Image (tube, rainbow, N blue to C red):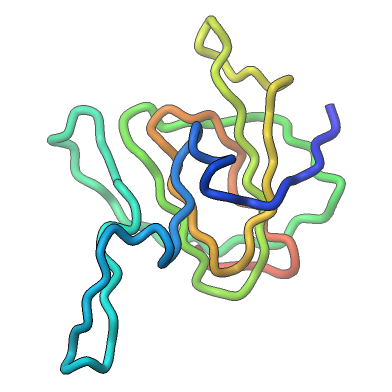
Length: 140
């Protein structure tokens, strides 16, 4: 199956997670004597069960060339996962729903091209391919 990535939007990605940006903030406040704005609740990080501890990690990822062969999908059944680009690079987001047997339904995969200022969070148990920076390596 050949996938052509779509432009990443909050609406198109909603079944798999959240697109995180200042536009997704549920509240915005002036802080630091009015010199800054705080954007609250940009994304919802969840664990199942809720008592699990959230972890923050840094990924440094080499760029990938197209066409890309997606040979597997992974998922994290106990928690959501946030990816926030720390360097200016576009990246591919590739996901697929679960089949009736719980395995990835690779034939129903979706791909999006995310800009360097777009962050995503995968819902728990969403089948996805690892990060794919496009233009050059990236830090997430």
